Image 1 (cartoon, helix red, strand yellow):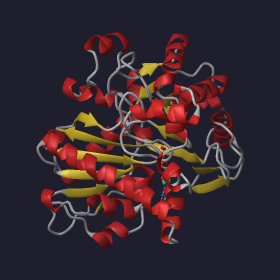
Image 2 (cartoon, helix red, strand yellow):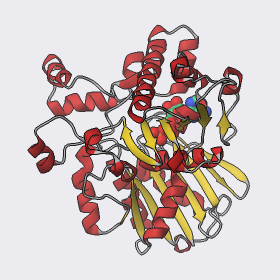
Image 3 (cartoon, protein in one colour):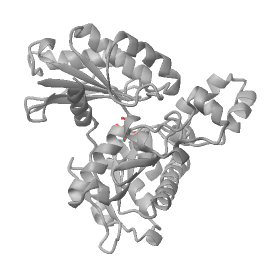
Length: 397
Ligand code: ADP
């Protein structure tokens, strides 16, 4: 059985074609910088890497390029779309409508459209991904695997907001959390690496990418997470503000003559480290600018690391301790400076990293950067949301 996994992010689209008998990857790739200048598709198959530097104004174009690469005479691994037995799509927002992975039907897609206001940056991307795949493979079963599922174990005092309880019941306004497949995967991998059962560990997982979230995983279960009702909450992100006093929304709208919707778009798309630095949402650009003395890029990096540090401390308090901190995703796996800033001055937790190991280049493997005297393990674990999505898709079908 071959499963194609499509993971549409806000500015990227990752895919893997997985042979489920071996869980081996037949082909995989990434479309980077979708909607930004300099977009490219990197496709790995047949032991080679193919780079297609092509404009990708949106996800529809990205999906058609991916399907082309999979069936191309040179870069392809299948002769037609019929060889794909199922497609698993990463979906972000579920509300309380979908508490588990779901098969794609017309009715499900209608409900997905209704959920777009929960995740204005992500759900439209997932919907476009599903539609583009359905157009190319109308008979192939497809599943949606939600970012929220892992977080349905949060206790009510962690997921509730302090608003009128009846409004929670009526409108389901609450914390949902996101990036669940990633937090689940890396916390399980951490337990495996440490030779323990997930039940025995208190882990803080830091998924730091273009979108970032931090989760407290106690005994294998998510007990709290930094994102909220939407993926706008938590730490500052590429273009998202993260936590902010919500009274700012009305004030900002009044000062800049915006509607509430426009003010939220500002907080989703024009804020975060891009807004503060005025340089970029990309941490590679930010660290380069900071190294050259750009004070606002330095400030953006400092704000990001400080916010992450506060969540680590808060979750250690919530769990009465922490055994392991995991860094994952684009920034978590590739930006030593951010990891070092988050982990410095954590002696009160008994946490220390090995600064030399922290600087070593990403080799795609699990890296242990725990300091010699540290009581808390610090691991860098490449996330594999695609494998989790493929497994859940097969289980569902
Ligand atoms: P998303 O899936 O939310 O779009 P990713 O997890 O792919 O995000 O992370 C994207 C971010 O990761 C980019 O902003 C980029 O700064 C950072 N990143 C990715 N690769 C590298 C790298 N090799 N070195 C430094 N930063 C990287």
